[in-house]
Length: 99
Image 1 (spheres, rainbow, N blue to C red):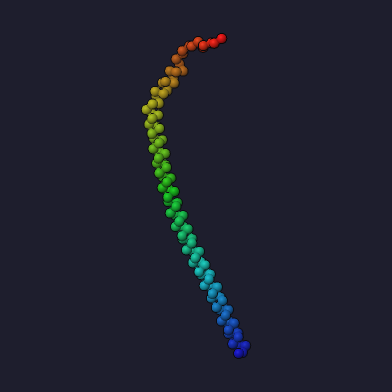
Image 2 (cartoon, rainbow, N blue to C red):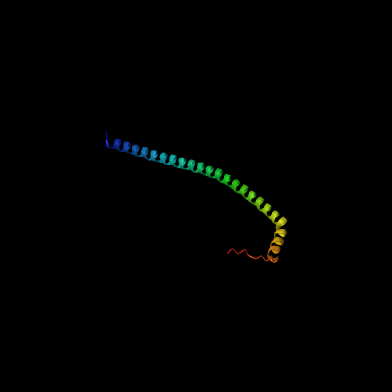
């Protein structure tokens, strides 16, 4: 074999190595894209679950606040009257002294 044949074989080998490297790089990029898509899908699924839980917690909290407000409106004036009566009504009492 001559020098020309060896040069041609060398070029073919270099071309095959470059082709293999390009193919490997493409497979890596495809795999990376697949994993990114899976992660985004996972993140979206779990974020929406948290959002639903937050909305439910907000509804429950608002319901409890409304109940407390209703109780306050219903019994508030009586509580104020009882406090004023307790503070303003003087009931002198002689302390018990034990000697």
